[in-house]
Length: 515
Image 1 (tube, one colour):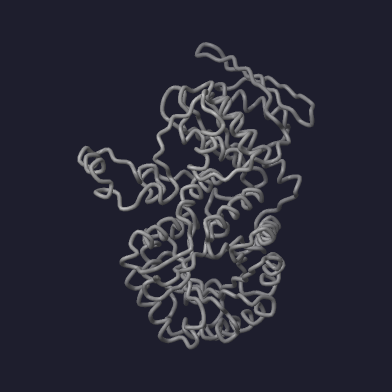
Image 2 (spheres, helix red, strand yellow):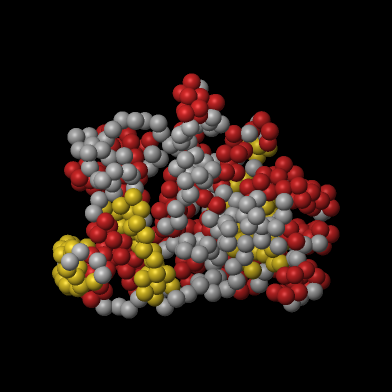
């Protein structure tokens, strides 16, 4: 049995700070539950003081998650710590995660404090947090660019005041594996009481070294690794959970580490995050990319057919993929569909399965063969559904290269039907303008993307849109074999998210965010 390494997931905090990756409350709860199924030790649920929405998300996650520690980030300030505790206090295993910058450049230009003032603030704020919660994580922001001796003094102070976890973040992705190894070793050897706490590391990927740096730190003695699903996060992102975990599992002979992650849930978690955030995983992404287990070269194909280990150092099944080739179509039954859902890593209630099966049957009437990707797209769209203030009913398009496109769209709101007609530069533009007439609210369309779920003329299309109102961005997603219908669904999905946010009175995010 190797050394036990804890996995700290910050997808819902640092990951969500990535531009375009914001999530609503229902989406955050869905992600938190998947992280719990995945087996992460700590879920950093958000930055409670950042906004009312962040606070409610952390509070809701803390109330529902039972197996993982639930943490909220806070600056080393009383108001931040108070708010963090309000959010996590009902968790079965709460944690307050407080931080202050320790590098010369941050202390001088951002904090405008002397090193002695930072030491004093560390002492006071860790002690302040400890009165609320027994589990306190203290982070020295920009640790990798800090003076090593000063860093040890700060950590010594935090430990004496009750910190249970010491975090040594590479906040701006500046360090290298050898250098980071030496830093963690130095901190271990020169910080009194360090053996009584967990040493955590949080690496950003600005130089593409986040995973390598994190694993080097683990070899040097770090016992908690901070990461995100798909590596999302500020700027170039964070260390990717799937790469760290599969690196540890695949090279157990070298690292001799153990962690509590159920690796068969990795692919499902990756798909969920990609679907919710609208951030596609690049095809050649390690572990979860579309090409991670694909072989086109004739030499590679020959080797894999002879023995998979010739070119595959891990199996698709180990991350939750399946090699089951059974074809599903319109004659397939509920049992086969249910088996395929389980093979793909979905854990649905009987009611959710029935709804998904009905949609599968409708799709099977349009397509000869329904692929795993089609099923994933159907289920994932339903998993992040929101309250539909406006429901899509029908549309009619009149378009061609010699006439101006017109669209008639009918929506339903509280059992009342609203129908408008508009013209535009093509059927999608005309449809959007017709919807605008029904909704009657000014906002801006920021982005529109079409992606084929599978290959072929009968492929489903996924449309993702982003709309903006009052500085807030709302993402929508639509799925259909008809690209205009998919576009209408995506546009309406974003509008419903916007209307839900208006009803809830969600404000803009405030406060400092740290990496």
